[in-house]
Amino acid sequence: MNSEELRAIQAPLKDKYKIEPDSAVVTLKAEGKIGEGISCKVETGRALVEAGLHPATGGDGSLACSGDLLLEALVSCAGVTLRSVATAIGIELRSGTVKAEGDLDFKGTLAVSKEVPVGFRNIRLMFELDCDADEEKKKTLLKLTERYCVVLQTITSATPVDSEIITS
Image 1 (cartoon, rainbow, N blue to C red):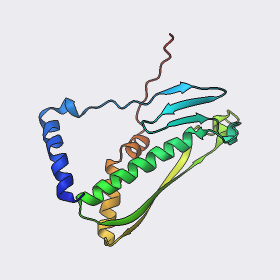
Image 2: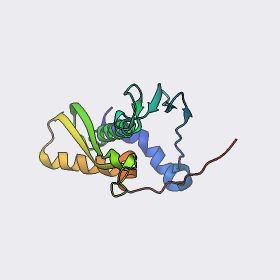
Image 3: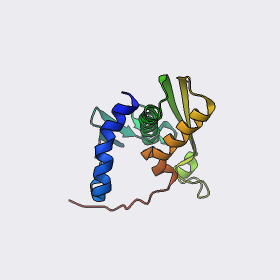
Image 4: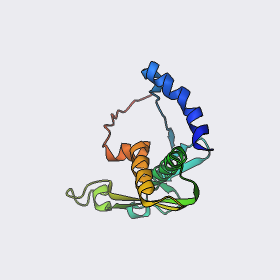
């Protein structure tokens, strides 16, 4: 796909969203089923992922850790966004790798220390690219990728989440 093809696909959507702003609001959903032991199976649309405890919290390592899934979601979103932005601004990517690393202190998760926050202390997102873009173009590519990556923006903006328990 080149930038003209991408623009051709996105132009009608952009026009529609300008005329009908509410049509741009989409509710994305994920669903999981409480599984055997301490696990939760998540249907991803492509495969079934069973999540469980990380070995640092008592898991045996046979199930996906939700922290890994968060980083995988970040990597997939950032990779798609980067490819889309590169196409839109005319950068030819011959190949690339997206990596995310995050540091967790499980003392917070296991209530060992109330002073230690639960969750990632920091996340590093790295792009290893094979392209001919100059430094200025690469800076623009990174800036726009960060700006338009849904998962990254959700993480960095501390989006409010409403939780409730519904009994059946």
